Image (cartoon, rainbow, N blue to C red; front, side, top):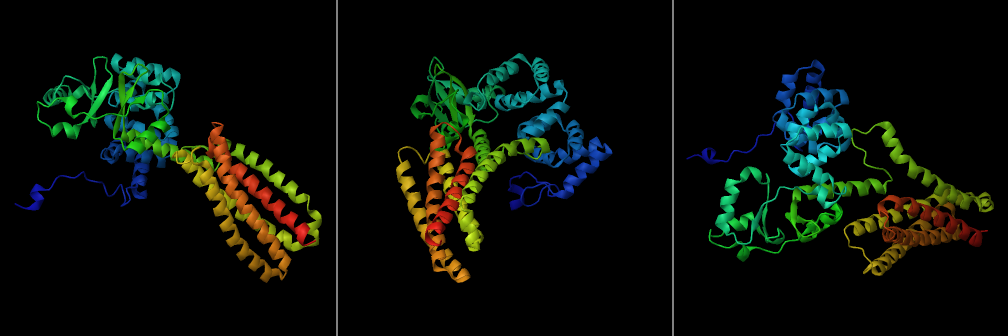
Length: 466
């Protein structure tokens, strides 16, 4: 028998649509645009029907609003349903405005409760009421219950579909139940949660572990302890628990300890990516700017911290103005002054980035804050000595003034130590004040490194050179 006869059938990838990096090709996007311009709905359906929902969502990001409006009308209903949770928030809101509420109600019934709730959350109030009214009572109640929890909480993140089994069941009972009630169970689940008569989790059995055991084996004999998540826990805390304990899924309980849902690793991957993206953007003082963001929205997200930065820059300029006489007496100071601030700013950014990441990963706490701070001070001192020697040598060769070399070397050393302190202490202080350290830290670290850099360089110049 040939190997081709027994080879498993792998899902085919439309190589015309995707390149080797699984990115939509310009040629494919152009075909979609041409079909949308021609109003060729059947062509659009042919082009999109074999795409993964994530690729359809990616496609929407490459299209203009006008082309998206045409394409969404011709997506197959099941593909539309699976694509909606994958869309960027801004694009999803725009797409939802184009979908009739009856069509949307039918599509939501194909989704797990957590994905359906995420979509409904983006609807305008009047459209939300129409969509929910068009859904079966059970599905509507599940979505309304999810929306009743705080945003970014485990209750909002969880799916209500869950596989639970009573304590007195054995492996055979559980397998028979799964086979007979398959349509009412989660589309994808990894663990069976064993519950007591009050529906409180007492343990869990993985599906793979279940299938390895004889039918007569009691669930209580093979179950393992589970990491319970409460409905009011923040999603970032949930992601930390999943990452720390290498979880695939976890039961969600209410205030009485009763099982109300589950969270699976696919949701956590999205949360981790979302939190990382937010932290990266906040370090630059901007909000989440997707491909669908408009000019006005992007401008509003960036301008506040630019205004704050303008204030700190004016303060640094005020420091410089106090040394006008020194600058007029020795032009070399004006030439070398930006170097001190620039190097200090880069060193501060390095320390800041490490600190913010460590705080997010809970690797930097009150238990080790002093040790980390002392480490950063030593790093700043060693880096400062290295850069100071190099810069002093360059300044000496350039201007031939030994005292100028000493001045700029000492200034760089002082500023790099200050940068290390600021890059560690400012995020720690903001975290203690329950403020997001990724948002405000960059502006204040830059302010300190600029101010200390100019003050130390010009102040030392006044003492040593003049």
